[in-house]
Image (cartoon, rainbow, N blue to C red; front, top):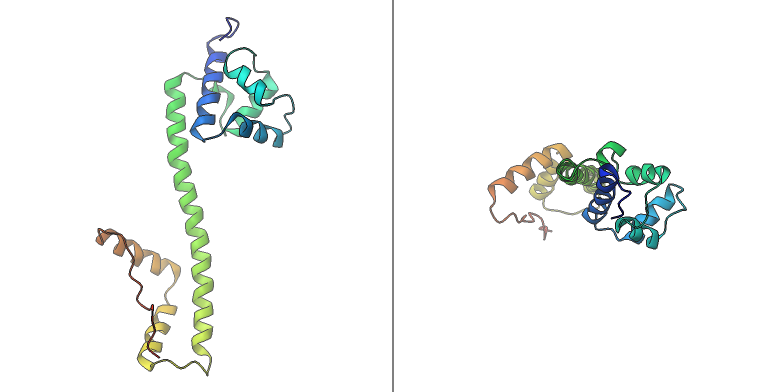
Length: 172
């Protein structure tokens, strides 16, 4: 790195590269994200030069880079230990956030499918064995929350973590 970089500048550059790599981004992908924020002074070659210490990061660029990685300038300029802790937190929290979003999507899909099945079962022309229809109607009354709790209990008690389909072939 050039000798003009002080510790905070050197930390910023190292942390920029670490954050980019932690996300699996190429330098070009970082540039794409920066362009979405209106930064037009950087291209892949410039990012490469910054990471090699051949070009300083300008303050507006630094602000945008920090924003892309959802971190403050202070944290971006911190020492490696603090920044690695931040990246660990971001990875763990990101996994939690993604799982929560997936759960929300699955809940909506479940509730839609549950309502569709209930409507189908109420149609007069649907012919199913009465006990089977009753069992399905009981299942249809179960909310996503009920199902999630039961699924978690089954998952935790089943070491193979494979779900068994109870109604693959309904009795007609």
